[in-house]
Amino acid sequence: MLRFDDLQLFVRAADLGSLSAAARVMDLSAAVASAALKRIEQQLGARLLTRSTRSLRLTAEGEGFLEYARAALSSLDEGRRLLASSQDQVSGVLQLSAPSDFGRNVLLPWLDDFQRQHPQLTVRLLLGDRIADLFRQPVDVALRYGEPEDSSLIALPIAPDNRRVLCAAPSYLARYGEPQHVEQLAQHNCLLFMLGNRVHDHWQFHDGKREMSLTVHGDRFSDDADVVRLWAIAGAGVAYKSWLDVAGDVRAGRLKVLMPELQGEWAPLNLLCAHRAQLSNPVNLLRDMLKLRCAEWAPQIAAGA
Image 1 (cartoon, rainbow, N blue to C red):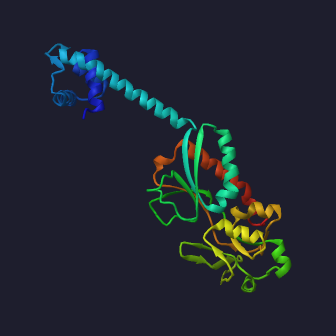
Image 2: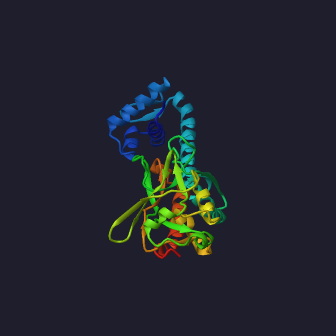
Image 3: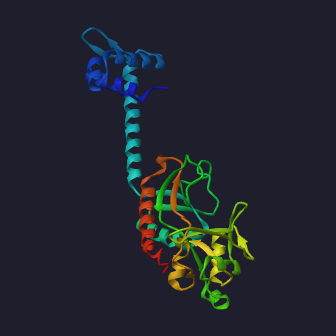
């Protein structure tokens, strides 16, 4: 296969009428330039240049090949310009995976605004709570809570201070009362989330002085985080959810944060990708938008309102 730099050298030498002059322009030694010309001639099976001690001229084969060499270099340059231009524009297809609850109820309206700002961008959104295989699935980036188990993935922080909060609907609290201490959760119906085969029934908290944990029980669990949120809104029990997932419900009065003085488990939201080459202009703009939107909720985490 012909090398790009060998083609450049041949065209420069033809234009300048000197192999040594072409070598100087391309910052090559005379020996490297001579080897490059020999290599391209061997690959083509033809003599391109006739050289003497004082002059250099194209052979008949060289004159015929020069037109195609110029066209090939011109096409490559145009391709590089188009690629650079597309990287600067916010266009193309952005393939994004996101958790079910956050994706449906928080991310969707944000993406609507994002696409209104960038109408040439097409978004492909995959929702689910299982970790997407970024090396096999047709996904550019994934939003996920917690640190990735796969250390080879690149994790870019979106909401590093996000935590879980206890919450329940006013209708549930009116029927069963509001727990005032962690231990009282044992008397409440706790709505459980499962990921894979693991049920998240061990809830942990910190009161500023010590860690507290409790294994909770309930009459229903789901592998869809949005279902757990809907159960909580319907008054079916107490949920232990990411603040970002329920902040809108708390603001609207559909849910109430319980024991807001407690700090729940960390649930940092990260943007994951397999390679830094996937951090295109649209991805970086999306990341900036998500960080800004999530930061608008951050001051309310501690207060839970």
